[in-house]
Length: 361
Image (cartoon, rainbow, N blue to C red; front, side, top):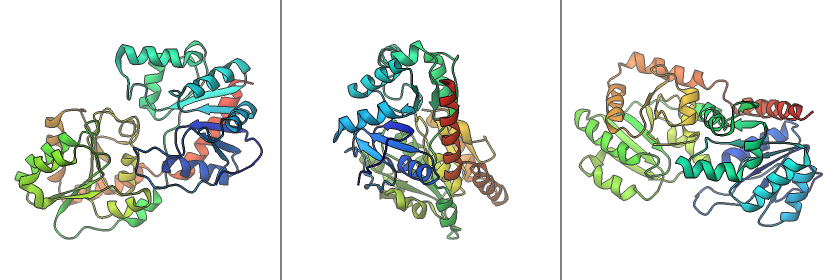
C-alpha cells in the first residue's frame, strides 16, 4: 500500500521496487532516515520476483505522476537512479534549474548501450550531469571509474553499491558431507551472464573430476542450449529453476563454490551473497562486486570476462584445492563481507545524503 506522508527530505527515483532496494530503503526509513521513493513502475514483467512489502513512503509514476512531481520538487535532496524515461529526464532538468540538491546514482554506464552511440545518448540525456559538477553515487568502484571517464572527475564521487541482509545467508549454511563438490550458479540464463561459457567449462572439468556437481538456479533463453551442452554429464547437473528472493539462502546452503561468469555486470549482488554464504567465488573482471570485494586467491578468483579457457582453468584449480586451503577460503569469504551488511548500507546511505547536501550549501 502506498504510504501517505509529508514530503520526505530525500526522494530517490528508481525503476521498480526490486527486493534488494526495498530491503535497503525499508531499513533506512526504519532507522530514522527521512526517505521516500518514486518508483517508475510497480514491477518489471521481465522479472520473476514476487511483490515486496514496502514500509517506506513511496509513489508510482504510472499511477500518480502529480504526486511524484510534488515529492521531487519538495525534497531537500533528490537522487535519480535512472534516466531513460522522458518524464524522469524532465524531472532531472527541472531539479537542476531549481538549484536544489540532487545527484545521480547508478551502475557503470554502458550496460545496454556501449561505444560512441551509448556515450552520446547518455551525454545528451544527462546534460545537467555532463555540464556541471553534480555528485555521482557509483554502485561500486567499477561504476565510479566509468562515470568519471564520461562525465569528468572534478566532482564528488561516493561509492554506494547495493546491500542486503547477508546474515540470512551465513545462518543458513550447512556443511556438505556427501562427498560431492557442489558448484553453484545463480542468475539469469542469458549470454550476458556467460552461462554458455559456464556449460562448456563445466563439461570439460567434469570429465576429469567425477565428484563435481553443478546446481543451476535461474531461468532464461539459454536453458535448453545449456542442457544440450551438458547432456553427457546431465546426471551431475541440477536445473533448479527460478528461486525467489526469500528462497536464496536455503538454495545456497551446502554449495562449495559460486561461479559468476558474466561478460558484464554493473554490480552482481550474487557475489556478496555467495561470499556471505561462505563460498569462494569465481567471477570476472567486468563485474562491479567482484572488483570491490574479491581478493584474488584469498576469498575467490577473478578471471577475464568472455574467456572460456580462463574460466575452465580457474574452475579446475579451485576443484583441486586441498581441504585445509578450501576451509581457509570459506572463512575469508565470510570475513570479506563483514562490513557489507545491511546496517552498513544504511549507514553509508545516510553519509552519502549528508555529504551530497553539503555540496549545495
